[in-house]
Structure formats: C-alpha cells, structure tokens
View 1 (cartoon, rainbow, N blue to C red):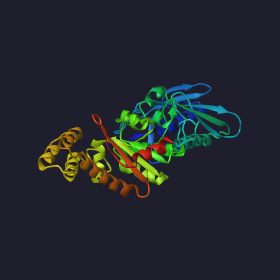
View 2 (spheres, helix red, strand yellow; view 1 turned 135 degrees about the vertical axis):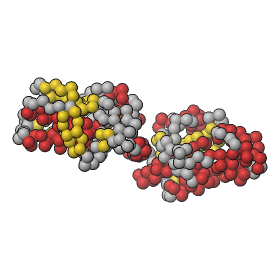
View 3 (cartoon, rainbow, N blue to C red; view 1 turned 90 degrees about the vertical axis):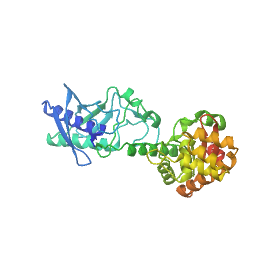
View 4 (tube, rainbow, N blue to C red; view 1 turned 135 degrees about the horizontal axis):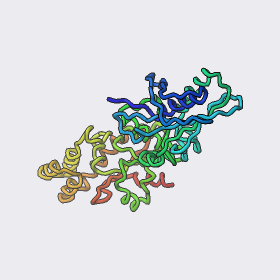
Amino acid sequence: MRYGFTTGSCAAACAKAATLMLLTGQRTDHISIMTPSGKEFSADITDIDMSDTVSCAVRKPASDDPDVTAGMLIYAKASLSDDGSSRVIIKGGRGIGRITRPGLDRKVGDWAINTVPRLMIEEEVRSVMDDNECISSITIEISAPGGEAVALKTFNPKLGIEGGISIIGTSGLVEPMSTKALIETIRISLRQKYELGSRTAVVTCGNYGRSFLKEGYGYDLDGAVKCSNYIGHTIDMARQMGYEGLVLVGHLGKLIKISGGIMNTHSKEADCRMELMASAAIRGGASAETAGRILDCVTTEEAHKCILDAGIETGTYGYIRERMEYYLHRRAEDMETGFIIFLNSYGIVCESQNAAGLMSRDLS
C-alpha cells in the first residue's frame, strides 16, 4: 500500500524551505523533514518567490487512501519581524479554513491548522533560525489556493470549518486507512454536539429518511451525527463521552442487522438481512412458504411487503424491536438507546418505545 504525507507535513516542509531562503538568500529546490512517525519526507520545492519575504510551495503527495487534497499546492510565506523576541508566528491565508464551532483541535476563531502541524512547523522553522543565529521573529503564513472549493468535498462544512481546508495530521503520514479517518470524524461530530450542550445523540447511517423524521418528529437530520456503517463504534464513543442517550435513525436494510447483534453494517462485514427478516417473520407467525419468499427477496422493501401480505407485521416487528433493544442495551450499558426504522416506500415501520422521548430531549 502506498503511503502519502499529510497537509501538515507539506506545510512544515515548505515553511522550513521558505525560512531557509529568507535567512540565507539562497534558492532551495529540495528540502527534507522528519515526521512524527519517524519517516523522512523529502519534498520538491516549487513556485518560489524571493523578495523581502519568501513564498514557496510543496505539492501534496497522493496515497492509496482516497484524498481530495492530493496534488494540491500547500504554500508557506516567511517574513521577518525585527522585534528581538525570536518567536515563530503561524497563521493561515487563502484557502485555509477557520474554526467556527467548538469541539475541534483548535478554539473557535483560530485558523484550521491543527496542534501537531503547528508544532512541526515551529520545530522546522526554529531549527533553521538556530542554525542561522536569527533572533528576530518569523511569521509563517500557510495557504492553499483552491482550498475553498476543495473543502466543500470534505467534512469541513459539517464540522464548522469555513473558508478552506484544514492543515492536519498527527503522524505526518497519510496511511491507506480511510476507516480510521471516518471514525475520527464521527468522534469529532459527537464531541461538538456534546460541547454545545446535547446529552442525547441522534445518529443516522445516512441522509435517507429526512422527510419521515421531519414530518413525524419535527427533526431535521442535518443536526444528526452521521455514523455510516460504524454503529458499534459510535455507541462506544457516545457512552465514553458521557452522553445520557442515543437514538439511531436508519433504513431497515441496515438496522435489521442490529437485531442479530451486528454493529458494523457494511455488506462486506455481514449481509444477513433476509435471514434476519425471515427468522423474525417466523417468530411473528409466518408459514414456511412466507419465510421462503422472504429469503428469496433482494431488498428489505420486498421482504416487508411479504410480511404485510401475510398479515404478520405486528409479531414480526415486535420481535425485531425486542432483539434490537437487547443488543443495543448490551453494547451501550448504562446509556439509554432507542431507534427509528423506515423504508423509503412505507415510512417508519418500527421504533423503540422510547424513541419519541429521546428525540424530544435532543430537540429541547
């Protein structure tokens, strides 16, 4: 698998190069830094502009992990301030976002340049200052032309980072592990809501069902935490943060898996939708023929119609409700959990008895 380097590594590398050219007056076309992971990042320096200040860029390397910032130019501009304080001042420029909501790595109002990249930038700049006996302060401005548009393809707008991309990374490397990045995004979303005062998390697997929830509960799914397939991880994180309650909202095709104790609903992990539907139908009074028809279905919409045709929806969904409540309680321990399940053609088909109460808590 091919590794890449983070926007933080790129920012630190071009900041080092810009500082070196500023203090020595000599052009630098290549620079190396050591990342927190212990791996060296050797970067070509491009678009160099040497005057009273020095600006240069590093092109962000691609990896085998999907990354909309791959290939972007990350710039650093270095300028001197003859104040004798020998400080390194880091700020953002064009294409770098600003923090507008709490719960992120930096406080509201800061540039979206995270703590580890800031430390990397300062360390590289200070090493050049020390080598050149610089006692002035140096201001480093990080920018990413085109970052405003690229950021719209990321989670930044959802997280409350406006106006551009983030300069991020903890190891300096982009590892081909998009799952890890997605789970961290879920964690940030949960933490933001918690810090804004929410003690009940409304969690959804996606954007489907918005109209059902709006009509039935007056709730807009834009305010929900998106967990994709990672239901178990999301429950764990919410409980650890101190949430008092959590309500899952999702399509039957995903949430039916919870009735079998499956907490990662990706089809590659487990795809036993029809088996679970058929077993619930048998518990609800289905004949062998009806159970067989359900097993032959391709979608849960079809299976639901089989259940309706057989007149066994009350018993079937009663059993599904019971098993889901059991497994959610076992995973969440002392945090109260509930759920709302819908189908696109039928609306809400099953919900826990406490769903309305949990939803009203998040709305209050």
